[in-house]
Amino acid sequence: QVQLVESGGGLVQPGGSLRLSCVVSGTIFNRLTMAWYRQAPGEDREREFVARVFSGSTTYYSDSVRGRFTISRDNTKNTVYLQMNSLKPEDTAVYYCTNWPRTEYWGQGTQVTVSS
Image 1 (cartoon, rainbow, N blue to C red):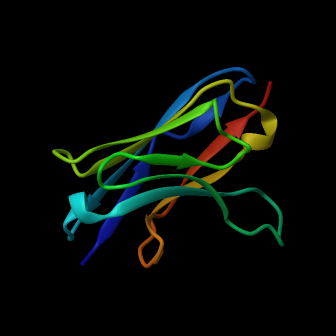
Image 2 (cartoon, helix red, strand yellow):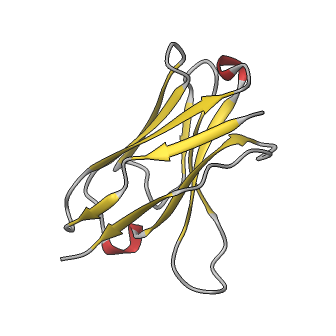
Image 3 (cartoon, rainbow, N blue to C red):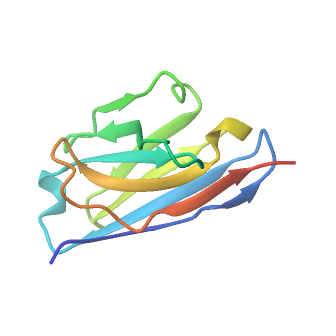
């Protein structure tokens, strides 16, 4: 079956950087458009789109992260990355990768906490 495994989260101070990874197995990765979403703490918070990368490496970002985050992929490793720079406290969330736009498959998420 299809599996997505995220890693790379942690605690970082404001202005710091993290690099998230998502390894995909059980499907033809290089045909998929991949995306990162995040869910901030709070009962009623919905998952928010962050960025996506098409199979040909074209990218698209939400306004809240454009210029600070970079999504990329390595088709030889079935992996999608999210480089996050200039992190802000409001970036605190659980980050998930998924296939876009159908979002059939999700990983378990990786926690990112931005705090001094």
